[in-house]
Amino acid sequence: MHPHRRTSLSLLLRLSALLAACCMGAALAQTPKTIKVLVGFAPGGGTDVIARLLSDKLKDELGTSVVVENRPGAGGQIAAQALKAAPADGSTLFLSHDHTITILPLVVKNPGFNPAQDFVPVAGFATFVNAFAVSGATPAKTFAEYVAWLKAQGGKGSVGIPAPASTPEFLVKVMGEKYGLDLVAAPYRGSAPMMADMLGNQIAAGVGSVPDFIENHRAGKVRVLGVLGGARQAALPEVPTFTELGLAGLEDLPYYGIFAPAGTPKPFVDQFSAALAKVLAQPEVRSQLTQMGLTVGHMPSDQLGRREKAYAQVWTRIIKTSGFQPQ
Image (cartoon, rainbow, N blue to C red; front, side, top):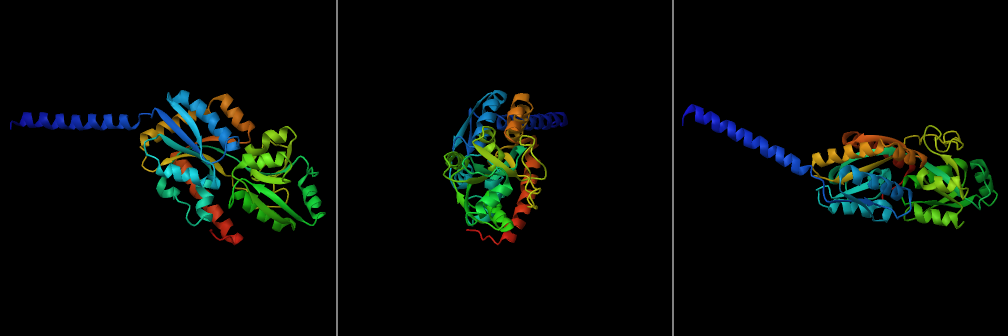
């Protein structure tokens, strides 16, 4: 073959390969017609409200339908298993906080998923703190008054938690040991049913995230008496931290993030993450999330992955120290 023809053919092949790669990348970045966002808790809870707020805004940024699908049960385990089984094409995502992604694999022998192998972090969007609250019928106005009230009744009490073997359950255990109380964690299938029992004065106290309690706290229907974290929350400046109350060591903040099945194309992950960053930059969205007690901040995929690993290391130490055995 003539040298010039060989050169031309080689150049043509290279251009064809480059064009094919570009077309493939564009195809991989195509947004599905409908994106399903799984939530592992019942409608009406803090996580559900957050998911619906973000999904409503994301549909405009992505130009596609974004719908929330609740898969409550087992502290988000059912939703996580559904994510693992979903196609890795961007059509199914999972909005979750630390409990399902980080804590569950540490306390359950066979959760049915391995975050490191089965999921890919898409983007994080906030950190938050857990809080201790009492029902409206409970006479205590401060945490010290709660301890005194309970001790006057023999020192025994039940504290609601959104899920078994969760961060709130460990807090209940640590609180009981620290303040000499016989506290029993009463697990619910999410924060919404726990809150319903607190509002109905069926249970005197509960532990959950600040978004779970804040609206009813402002309405005077429940009272938040303490928050975790290293500083008081802007949304609850009157409420002391547990560090102030003498319970140190739980200052590391949990997080909220969005995850996809392993193998989801990186162009889609980057596209969704960028869209979420734009949504979080909207003043009304940022304001609503902040008012719910969240500290808003976009975390791209790699940053969310590092946050997840660091948080897992902290809670591995806490769980081992507590003597808790995976079940």
